[in-house]
Image (cartoon, rainbow, N blue to C red; front, side, top):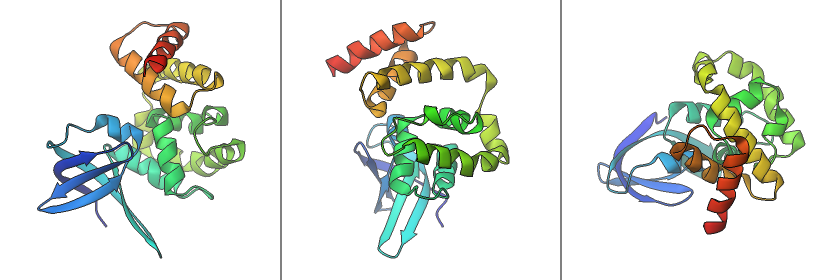
Length: 200
């Protein structure tokens, strides 16, 4: 029904954003990924949208990129995956990494995301692998040049998750470290992330 909303970003919380469009304020539920990409409140913003409709629910979901919205909609097609879990998955991993986990038949890479166990991870891969293969934008999102960097990030995140930290917490720390530093090994990223997590 709505392709996107462009307007002034009024407020941003960890899981929601309010955008004013022509004097009307719209509340969107957002992922941690979209949250990190939003500008400062008061700035103009564009959010791709999905309107989730059920008998007792009418809720807008907002995404900073079209590929994130596309994956959100695909996740909703999986039995047992509702919008809350779909948003948690998008918060727990970057879109290209989720694509790679599905296309590479690697359910273990989805473990650790809140609400995703072995059965759910296997079902996501079973239900979505063929659908992703048919979508050229999804294929294009998996850039072969970026594979080593994505693997480094995911290896570091998985190592930290095994130490007992939540995937969302370590994802934020690892992404921040890799944005500021290049040429690090997995061990160096893990050590830096541990320092960052303990400081926060």
